[in-house]
Image 1 (tube, helix red, strand yellow):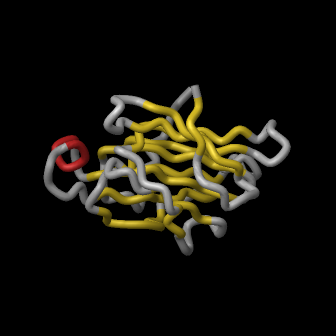
Image 2 (cartoon, one colour; image 1 turned 60 degrees about the vertical axis):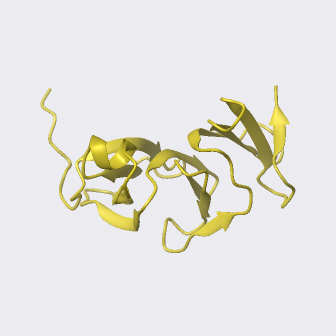
Length: 149
């Protein structure tokens, strides 16, 4: 079995987060920065989010951003991006437009979407003042995040 590189269109080579569209397995999203020092350092990360559809190439759909995109998660017709500065972004059109979800955390390290729940939940793992906490909110409501145990 031979694997082919899939770098076409992606200028930033230090890839970090990956998510696949559950409705279209040929549609992938990845976050990337120029290198580890930019991604995890104290200066602007120059991080971006890319989309791959079908046979490619990668297309930049968000960025560059000052804060690194540490987490990506897909839900029904949704993509979420969690940034190191605690910003949480959502798109419902494959990355053509983005909305910042109001709640800021200490720095997002992971995202997960639970589609089994009746309404669907978005869970956020952050590295806030309490070192680590988990938050969740319903995808069908505009309610605030609630703490998880």
